[in-house]
Length: 262
Image 1 (cartoon, one colour):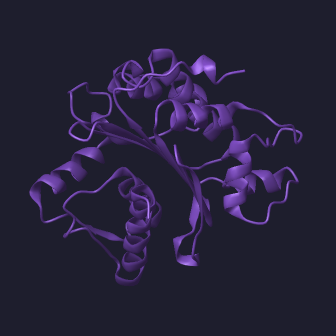
Image 2 (spheres, rainbow, N blue to C red):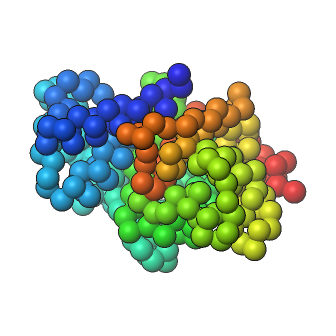
């Protein structure tokens, strides 16, 4: 099973046990990745103090969680390998400073296909969140792994899900993973036209930059990579109210994005 999907299931297991016990017990964690941590932070936030957090016994991991959940340090350029979790504002125009910080953290994309490519790819992802999700809460974080030479950028929202967006426009799809696939293949909620934006975006990420993208939305998930894509149907306890996207990019990488844009 792919690592990114395993990380999401790790979140699901923590969520299930914490709802039963009233404690989110992270004491045994030796390292926690964005695909686990970001949905956990969203979950705890929506529980409104009904769940007590127990930090890892490992002091380094405990300190990491404390810092990465402190949004006040998001705009502080301190050279760390992680960018703390921050909430996206409801108005897209107010997210520009956050995008700029995300670009800065990743060296303006110079190691991820170049500045124009990186900003185009990440900007398109954020645009889709604002255009389709109808979220009340949305968050982003980023993490570099210098020894392994890759970086994660992770987004989560509590919106209507990808399939929910289709249903709202009268496009009925049987499974949530099919809705994800159709969205990436170009099916649009705009008058049932077909577009190429997300499809092109994903091909640049996976084929051009040799990256991976995990999307979880509702009761479906799809992992995209150079190998193709792997769909998942989630069990009831693993359903996500909204959408999670984790982009994993090796660096340094080079790509000519114009080879993919027709």
